[in-house]
Length: 154
Image (cartoon, rainbow, N blue to C red; front, side, top):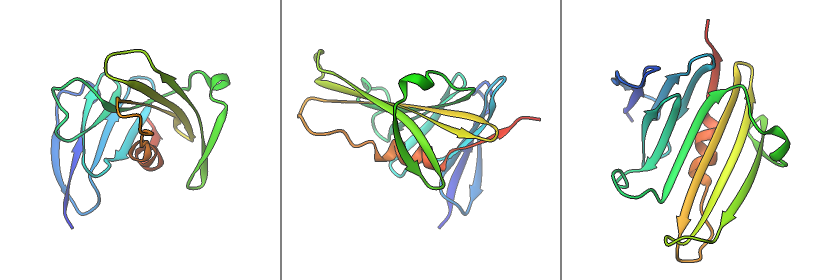
């Protein structure tokens, strides 16, 4: 099955569409960080926002964000606050989840995770807002983080 690979420049201004035989992907190079590449989860679109790759469900663009996944290459952040662990393939992600019940859109749950790679750290922030009381599904976020690769910039 042929897909489209989306490559984003560091400034996010030059999208290149390439034919690929693998799953959809996005790549961005962050200043001073590493080159981040991910496979885009099915049903999601990707775009750059500064040094980040931002994923949203297709069809959600332009509306108030109810689900957003943001991946950032870098050097790590609040390691002490990331007290939970989750296996992702051969490595372990450190993470935390927070819930806010205030707001007109319902409960907002935020997942923050970091994954160490030889080229640096990949930070994931995913936010889901629901007013139906159901548990949020962060599997697309975990999937994106599991496929993320951080390679050194030379």
